[in-house]
Length: 131
Image 1: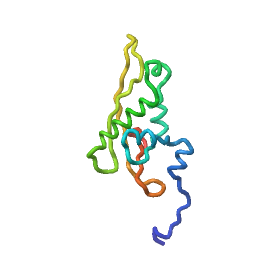
Image 2: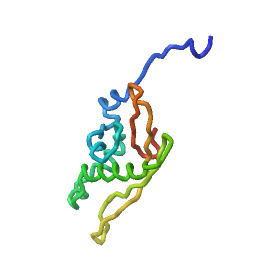
Image 3: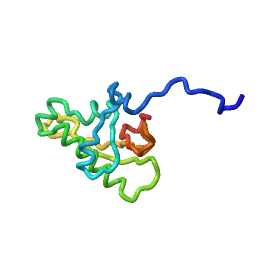
Image 4: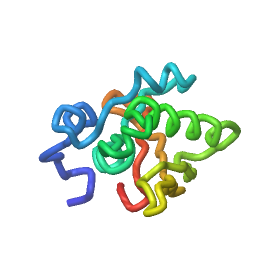
């Protein structure tokens, strides 16, 4: 028996991951940012960094603005880059200091360009430790 004799017993598609809430489809905003391929981000990235807490929202931070920042930095980082993996850095306001100033944190993010469900190119943006 060789490896070609094995049958696939289960697949998990990108569409299923989006439907299940494992990925968040951000393709519409990605197109507005000038990105040609469909884009999704992991829910961990979305809930931990893109979606601002109420105290951060009170500072004028919005989900749309933070997502637009990530997509714009990705687009400029990807310009001229070759290869399926791209690491880039994005700064986020993450809190308020005891003196009342904002706390900003620069984080590494990872983007992978890979085949989608129909083998079309798609991009997934995530935290560096995610797959």
